Amino acid sequence: MNILLQNSSGVIKTPGYPISYPYKLISQCRWKLIAPEGEMVRLTFLSFQMNIYDSVEITDNVDVWNPYFLTRSGLLPSFTVYSTGRQLGINVNVKVGNTGPGFSAIYSMVPAAVSSGTCNPDKNSTVHMAGEGMSFLTRDFPNTSEMALAVGTSQHPQGSFIRCKKTYAEVFDVTNSTRTFLGKFCFNQDVSEQVVYSKGNNLLVSGTFRQGGFIATYESVKSIPAQYSCLSNCYRQIQLNETSGEFASFNYPLLYPNGARCSWELKAPAGYLIQLTFHSFNLENSQDCKADYVEVRQSESYTWATKVDRFCGSSLPPVMRSKYSKVYVDFVSDRSGGYPGFHASYTVFPDRK
Ligand SMILES: [Ca+2]
Image (tube, rainbow, N blue to C red; front, side):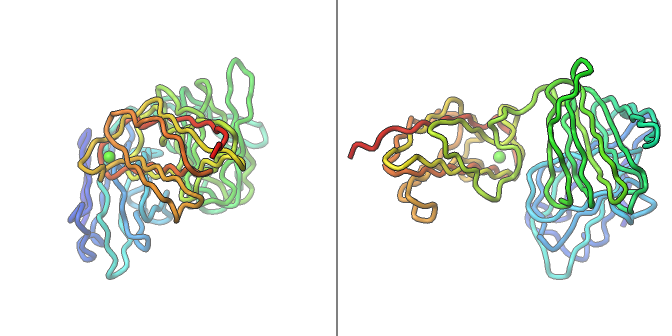
């Protein structure tokens, strides 16, 4: 069943969302989004709760469904993809018996980003990109590419490598012709999205791709998250072992995505305890804080947490002084409604008992 979408914007939901998707129906669904001349497709998954064995496959050519541009499974925080051209197709590959709440997404047709120049490794050439955002990839990705250089610059970019194969790319911030190295990204990570933020309004991606390559998306954003905010879905805890520090929710002070989870372990040196202070707090409010929340536990270990305080809404939680040397903070968001989140700091103080 092909669902052709050519309106300037709209909503896409899996059948049965948010209860569960029926196998027979969803395996037949193919959404084809086609932008008019001079425009491209922006697709934002607001909620993504698929079974881990089922995958959502996205192609940038609705006439050729393989190879896929991107595949995603499981529970993920909200994310955005752009087309590389005028098309974006969505197909769900499901195994019998599996189900999940599904996904809900919004799409819109946006002015095409400007892209000029052709990568030519021998001439050390650069592809320039400017506009609200676009996806770009090394030639022939995910097939092995013989191209040796893919370079992009754009304005106000937030870039994310969404799929990589046998490769790494170096990313630089470029301000007044000065390059600042921001890091090496990709390696061989196909699953976790790696996001990099520019300091100014130009980002340069450079690498040699004799084997493998990558697909990445950049998006122009008005401001960037604080360095101390949680920047990716953390399935392991962020360890904070200094005598003081600060931390904040996913993407703070920008709105946190749906389906996000960040966990921190604050650990004081022997003979010290922890004082935790929230400086700003604005989460979705709900009865018993069942939607989005921050949980604070204090104990010698996570599983033996003796006291659990749960907070949501916009009231600032009180300053807390722990009775133990460790404090655990969890931040969780549900599948709808974005808010700025929280910013907190901690400091240690001597245990005088
Ligand atoms: Ca929420």
